[in-house]
Length: 202
Image (cartoon, rainbow, N blue to C red):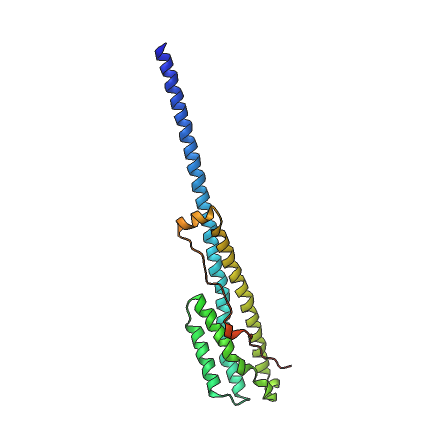
């Protein structure tokens, strides 16, 4: 009788132990799945920020490539002061040499400021208004600036989405463990470039 009771007790203990083990394994599995899911989601959003900035970068390069042609077309019709050309050349060089998103966006703003005197020269030189090449470049420059503005917004939205994702629980815990940190490279307009450059012939 004692042996039977002992066997039942032992069997009950083993059964409880097995259930406890199963519960522990399930909980560990759920935690692991939560971590993996959060990590993958955060990684995708982080990559999205880089992809969004690459769109900005392509348009910054396109804008930089337009500048020499714009300068050449103006020089053919107007007397451009050396300091204006020097400022444009230096700003363009700064844009091409910039490496980080912060540096590139700040350099683009400086280029915008340096271009203002050049793009306003049509007011002093009426013949410039009829220059087909200059008008085409004006359209391209304006279109590129619009594309940059749209790409900047997407870039900022991507950063906001990523930062919001890693800020909420349990993602905040998993992000910390996986080494994901908030991204702070939002585009903020340079105070000196509040006026977007636009060549207007009207």
